[in-house]
Image 1: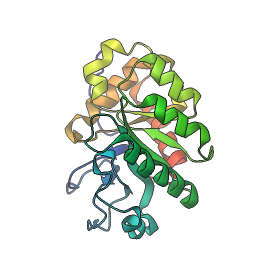
Image 2: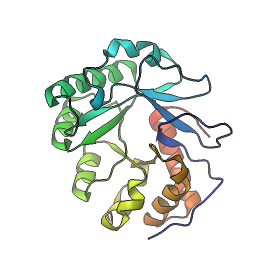
Image 3: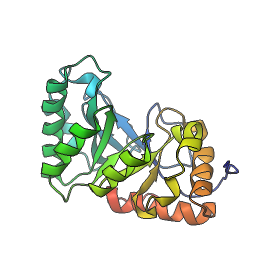
Image 4: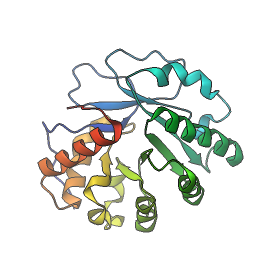
Length: 224
């Protein structure tokens, strides 16, 4: 099912990379992986140690970023079997960020590749009040509902355009547990939003309103 690209809807981009563009009408939550980055004053962001960077940075180096009122989340952090860092090291770094998010009352933006059982074990012992957002989800229906049952929110990006034919479960995901994102493909945002709305059998404006409400509830920020 292909949605028709839509324009002019106030929908936040829950996870974005790259340099902010001038006159960008979309509210994008930028991801910061380098703790020594200079973040423009008008940018809201998440910050944390990506699993590919496990061992590269100390978490304390992110404290100035975490202290910023414009830092809305910890991450992206998580586990990735394709990363060079060992899984035990990744787990140590990830669990430290889970604890940091709990202490600071911030949600987590999660990167997970081929480590969903391990991720769910950490989630089971984590602070239930801390929202977990699984960014760029492209998994099976079974994985999706295991994560939803554990209390996670799923964020969908360009993978939704590529894998729509294998994601017939998408319409069954509760509307209040969905976010949309661009990751590294900001030019696809309208198409992602339109496809997601069509797959959920909703008008784009209705779907957009629900996603915006989810973002504002999870990240505690009125963005649009």
